[in-house]
Image (cartoon, rainbow, N blue to C red; front, side, top):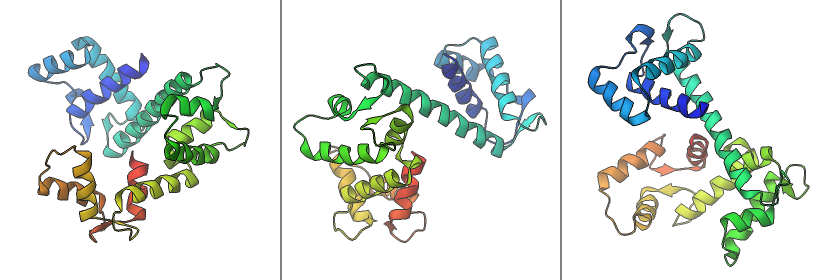
Length: 225
């Protein structure tokens, strides 16, 4: 419940702007207030209370303003809390025998069709890499690595390899716009996407603007997820 309130407040604060936010200025106008109340199901008093609480958490130097750096740091903290909550929910759902550990059999039973040998083989490799103590089961910390491969160097590289293998149609070790466009069109189930929109999305990943999404850029994409 606490996490839901923090998340709601985060949305409200983002609506107020991402520059330097003054505590006295964080009051939405009437139209926005009504929209926000409907969106998060909180009264005006509750919204103000949550905003004040979040603001105090952000304002680390207690100068009555939240800088971009303070907002970014708080959002990173929020992301971590949500990651932990998501992992815990998945963990408890997969642990069928309730022993506090996840076996490979429990994992495959929850996520993979038993006839999909390729997927099972791929998951086994990730499972083995996440199983840091080698006991054949995953603890909560190890499941966190499995679900969030950017937290582990080896799992990150496995994820990068899988992304490139799935996207790189000409097998040159990087993703061209032609590769990207072909894969997006397949994923869209026949729905056409405008060329300009595809190019804009591709460019957002191709940070060095060399016309390709290379390993370093894929690695950053995985980290940003």
